[in-house]
Amino acid sequence: MLKTLLKAIVFFIVLVSTVSLHAQKTVALNETSKEHFFVNKEIVCLEDPSNKLTINEIKSSNYANKFIANKDYYPKNYNRSSAYWYRVKVTFTKDLGHSAIIEFFDQITDHIEAYLPNENGDYVKSLAGADLNFSDRSFHHKNFEFLINNVKKGEYYYYFRVKSKDKVNVIIVFRTVERFIGYALSEYIMFGFFYGMIVIFSFHNLLMFLAVKRRQYLFYILYILSVGLYEMATDGVAFQYLWPNHPIWNEYAYGVSLFFLSSFGLIFTKELLHVKIKAPTINIIINVLLVIRLLFFLTCLFYNNDWFKYKYLEFIPLSLCFFTGIYIWWKKKYGPARFFVLGYFFLFTGFIIKIVHILGWSRLFIGNVVGYYSLSFGFLLEMVFLSFAIGDQVRILKRKKENARKQIIKQMQVNAELKDNINKDLEIKVEERTKEVQQKSKELLQKNVTIEHQNEELLSKNTLLEQQAEEISRMNILLEKDNINLKTNIEKVTDARVNATELDFDEFSLKYPDRDTCYKFLSELKWENGYACIKCANTSYCNGKVPFNRRCTKCAYEESVLHQTIFENNRIPINKAFYLVYLMYNHKGAISSHKLSEKLGIRQSTCWTYASKIKKVMEERKKDLKGVGKSGWRKLVLDK
Picture (cartoon, helix red, strand yellow):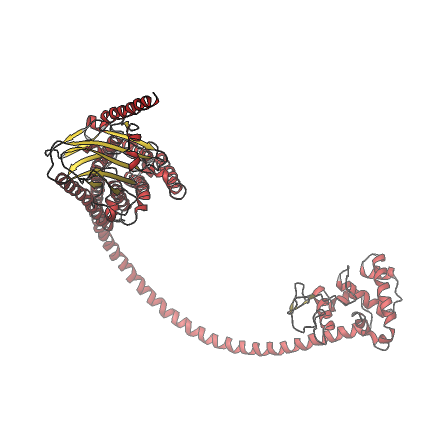
């Protein structure tokens, strides 16, 4: 009973598997079939979240019923962390008699494994994808191709394993080799035409830039070169010709080229349409968008390059350029903007058609070919009309220059007429002036004769004056000598009076009238035997901040002229302090503080304090002062 039940279960599983196998739509091909796109139920798929399933497991009966029918027109890898297995079923009604291939279109697919049956029924593995070096491909073509090993009559299952970091359209196409060669040649001819146009436009605008030195040509060159790089990156041509052995650059190429495309597009818009002058608010918006675009680009480049896939964000700068052109054309009536708007209209249309194509709707309206190449057509038409815009701007500038040249010629004619009239007036005035000059010349000649006679008289008088000046000079020399002697005698007399008799303050002030005179006296008295720094004993010095202070040139210590004198910490005028010492010495300390206050005009208490200090010093130096006469007061000045 149990064995019968097990047989029934196995029979049911086989029956279900068979039903599942026959649920897939079979594609019938014959010798007349040149090309076929696998779509809808012609493809079944299986998601492999573990990324570990092998071909032997996939083709076994355990997984045959796990494939599900494709729900889209073209399958997609919705979960990019998983591997996806795709199966197509083909029936050759007759032997083809020629080679054929299976082709995958989406150039950003990272890894494709194709398992195609050979004549022995075994599956042969082939590899392709954007992660492999270009030289490792079976066919050196921008798409991914696999050679069908068996084109004999019969029914075959083809398995494909697809793994990609980006979301891709799994477009599987059957083509004969003959059809592939014709299609590839036509496509590459179209690429040559497109990229040739970019080179021609770039070279033409480079010559214009070198000729007229207008920055808009340079930005236009950078813009169309960015367009070319983006198209090459998305078509796979750049990988084929520019970096075939560095597939890692495929992850950055279209993101970098899109950044330059949008940035130079915005800058070119500003330059061509004079946005800064005609629309200052829009100019600020463009500058802000440029900064935001740069920050987003740097974030994608250095933080997460997976964000490069948000290509739809380029709709924002594209729309801003389109709106700017419409505004300046419609509101500011700027002629070249009409070609700019027309060019961006075609690019805008191509961009929308490209989105429709990516969403898989283009086949319903315009066909896959137009949808696939719509953005390229849009860029091409945009370049043409932008060139018209630049040409129209040059025409306007040329017309303005021509008008300016005509105005200059007209003004030159007016200037010439004015010049002729002025010259005629000047000739008449010159004749009149010449007559006046001749008349005045005669008068001057007569005056010159008179002046010559007067000069002769002056010369004789100057001779006498020179003789008198020499006599006066000799007398001045003699007077100067007498003055010097007189001054010397006065100083001697003053010193003698100071030392011989008691002087009042006014007479004393003639010798020591102010602070500088007193400081000079103290400086000569203090350092009469030479200067030596009290800190380091250095003998070299320079002037200090206060007059007559001395600063050491070695340790920079500045010694005050009052330091180590009786006047240190003095709070009364220095000349009065000198006079107080002088009085105390002459009276041998017997003069009262009241008398000192009367003579000096200083408070009695202050005079008493200073008198006490001086009297103490006189007592200490009594022996030194003995027999020195009236000049002994000077010896009280320095501290021992």
